[in-house]
Amino acid sequence: MEKFFKNRSINQANIVSIVLSGIFALILIFLMAYNSYKEYQEDIKKIKKEYLQKQKEIIKKETNRALKFIRYKQLHSNKKGKKELQKEIVDAIENMRNERDGTGYIFIYTFDGINIADPILKQNAGKNLINFKDPNGKRVIYELIKVSKQKDGGYVKYVWNKPIVNILAPKISYAKAYKPWHWMVGSGVYLDDVQKVLAKKQEEYDKKMFHIFSQILLFALILFVGSMLVYRYVTYLITKDIGYMKKRFESVFSEYDMIDTRNIIFKEFKEISIYANKMIQESKDKSKALKELNETLEKRVEQKTIMLEFAKNRAESLLKAQDKFIKNAIHEINTPLSIILTNIELYNLKYKKNRYLTKIEAGIKIIHNIYNDLSYLVKKDRVTYTQKEINFSKFLKDRVDFFNDVAIGNSLKFKVDIEDDIYLFFNETQLQRVCDNNISNAIKYSFEESEIIIKLYYDKENIIFEIENEGENIKDYDKLFDRFYREDDARGGFGLGLNIVKEICDKTGVAVEIYSKNKINNFKYIFKRQKDEDSSS
Image (cartoon, rainbow, N blue to C red):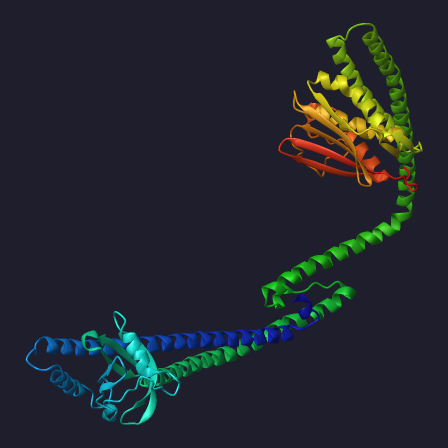
């Protein structure tokens, strides 16, 4: 929508809005007409249903009345013979009809289809009409006899000649058997009168729709004319404001003249003018400041150059001193660490393990791991880490053995599942940083008396190094590999280990997958099995 209005005038935008409003109005009219039509169709269905039900009740009532009359006459005319009694009943029934339109009369047939009573078609008296069919092929008398034998009788729809007007018309009849004499007694009614009711309903519907459309069109016309008048007046005022602002902007660039907001009508344009005036004032101030700056620029540049040169030399001096200090500190730390570890190992070989000495050894190994991280950080940009074939299985077992005392000191156990003879083309120093930092982190963040699971196995074209521990779940995946970031400050450390691991993995093409849910943390490192000749660090 924004693209459609781009580079178009306000007049064009207003015209589009009016056209869209007209379209929406037409849609509204259509929906109203459609709903009215649906309502009309529902009324038609209802009228048909109610009319049919009413007629069915009438003919059922007439038929049952005739049956009561027959039953009464049979019970109270014992002195008369059966044929005489039946003739008397038929004569009486033939006079029970509506003389106006020839409907509502009672007809009687035997179960064999022989006509006994029909006050309209008297020429059919005595005839067997069991196989008589209406224009649609329905065996009318057969169907009526069939339904009459049901417990409550039944209805049959068919086409029959309508008396007086002498035309075929739809008809429905109700028939019920008088079993003592094997008679089918029935009465019917023509259904074409419902069309008159429906025609009247159609006329009412047409008038209603004409009235609705007239009102809508009148309202739409009034709304359109009013909208056009308002639109033209508002457009005139907007154009007037825009013309004034355009004229004032033309003089801004040459003379920095301010826009007089008292001559502007609309609030929005006034706000634009206020911001424009602020920009003009800022441009004036900046132009003045720029002019002053140009006058003294050369002198200031010279002064700043001297200051920057001094700051640069000072910073380089400090960095060199810091670098030298770190290198010396790392070198000095290495010697006593190596001595302590060596003496502990000699003591353990000569005497039984001492639990206090084990704790000291665990602490020294943690410090040794930190020392290795710092040493790697200092050397990584100056040393080329060449790759070679490494027995990853043996290497990882050695690193697990190195940290075993640390785990024991923290009330933890290693559960190792390392496949034998897994070889990897990698740099040994970098591989040690990956293994040591993950094992150290698992020890640091595990619950007491829990297991740390360490796995190494082949998976298709990859080698998988996996380490899992029980502990608090990782809070922030995005910061996990950031330098100096620690999930729990109380656990100690510098927050360097995982940053080093991630940097090594990124350089060597090792994929990293992390899972942390339900107090289980799993780190998976996916190494390529084949030698990658193009990789370098």
